[in-house]
Length: 473
Image (cartoon, rainbow, N blue to C red; front, side, top):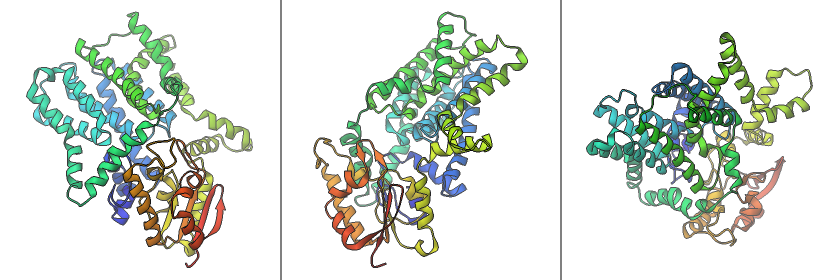
């Protein structure tokens, strides 16, 4: 959405579509403007932001922990972040969690100084950007009011809460300036999630798997919580109110995950970040049994090894020639995690050749990455087709909402009028119960088969990606 806005002037939710609120678009815009529209560009911005976040977390945890323990908590977070990529890295829940922790900083300092109006507004805006990513994060601002000194300062508490919803309110105000834009914004971000996506649920066993993953965080946390309960841990300088805030935040995070019923790893981002100080206490007690000079080297070596993508690395170690350098195998393993479909690269290279580099390209997929990597103007607004494929009633093949039926008709009309030179059908992409965009969606979309048969011929196939070329171009 950020790329289409910058290069083609297509406004989110009007010229392009996504079910998420626009908070993450701000980060994508910055990444594209600074480093260009690529995976590397976004990762460069992510590295800068995560470095700043690590320093912020150290300042945050040292309010109650010794410096050494606070640094351990930061390193655990860093290795957790690396190990969990791509299921956590760059995800909106991570960014929102860090924004909320930064927003809480002035109110949870040990010395509890008076917070200035400037700090109050700054904290409100930080929380507001988290709310712009996902409005349900406003509940953490309410927790902040309930368990800090703001509870006895109603005017200041009200100011924080008002400022924290201001970015979201402004986003609705901006879309209200254009005819039908506000309606599309509301349909995409609110109604679609309530009517279709919100009904999806994964087996409850997924909750437990994500809860204990990765082990480099969960195992030391269990040990650390045991030390705290047995009063064998280093002193934690927390007031009763802040202890309640900490516990309430953990419980609330798990409650939200359970209500969502998806159990994606990034939904546990706030939970995992909150576990790091307790996990650090557990690790510190283990390190105390080692020679002092070797404690940090052993910790970093062990956690670096645990943070490697060892599942993919093992596959590459077995499949690649033994003479290949280990660093090359590690890099290939990370690449396999981030971009597992190598055919996608070949499609991008094929359509980027000089004699094919002009004209619209419509990518029919449940994965938006190919559309970004092509850097070509698309015909339709959907980087991911689940907008017109997911159903409010999954048992009914035609169980679409009225606005989805309108979107489906408009999509075919757009293809007819735009006459894209190429149509790419990514038959290997999956979105929940939607398997293969053609068989689960396009084949039953009125007008698509007739358009494809009358105006296009199969050009070539890479893996499960089919490229159709318009006959008269």
